[in-house]
Length: 387
Image 1 (cartoon, rainbow, N blue to C red):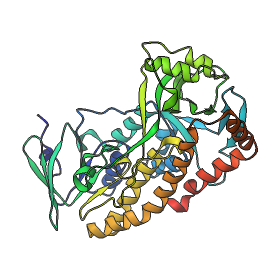
Image 2 (cartoon, helix red, strand yellow):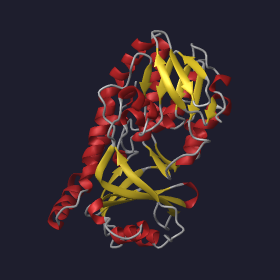
Image 3 (spheres, rainbow, N blue to C red):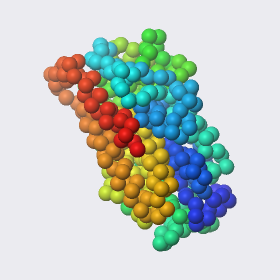
Image 4 (tube, rainbow, N blue to C red):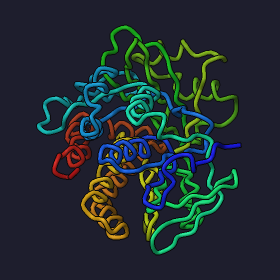
């Protein structure tokens, strides 16, 4: 039986945050730094970060700095000075020098579980309750009554759904929402970084992309996909992966040679959440629960971190919860929509095409690829847009 959430901060003046992922932890930390009463509850039995690695773009690293974790994050990550985009033979199409872009901040790459641990340590275990599942909630004008699976109830001034792309709280508030992006799939896995690979590389094939991100400790975060599902017909996952990326050159053969039947392959289904509203009177969604984003611009974690900071600021300056939530959504929607739109555009570029189209694409990328990527990332890195 789950431990009673009433054991901590379950008064009608407290904030309940559901989901101890990036969004929930960052919001909890921001509110605790304001001296607020917070309960962070998660239905999982304990901490565990899904995924392998994460690229923290400049806006994500800046958000961590504002949460007081900038130095700790930098010490636990690989600093990313530039990224390379290559063809499937490993020949460079273009590079983007990140440190030469004024105001973009520092890009970092780390193990995903490391980011989870940093946020959890800053929040403190005394503020988190694992294995706590909501079975019902009722909104009243002044608070929200929550009923838990152990039979207890609690009341809160605000309930925040930070429970991910398959959010239970979103379903309770707004009904079922389609989240999947059909026709594209892939895998994530961990390998050892080949000698000579010193910065992230994106290898573009026809209907498939291989992402290689060096991590601390000599590890390599590998994203085998997005891949057009038309390529993933027949065979076991490892066989499919080898078949799709088997003709890649450059560093790819050294990475694929490490794979075996014992290699943990994390199946990747891509998602996008776009809903008309993120809030009711005293409930609000943040992070992937509100606006799950394809990974093609590495903005899912960044948007989640920013959500936590921005919502905390609105709650600090506006005592009337419904007004604070309205202000939060009004501020965040344009920025999130921009990230979603740009990420989707790049996501669907992974559809199968003719070889002639791929030749033309590569020619264009050699000429203007860096400018195109800078145009997609640039507005999201601007400091004034995060305030």
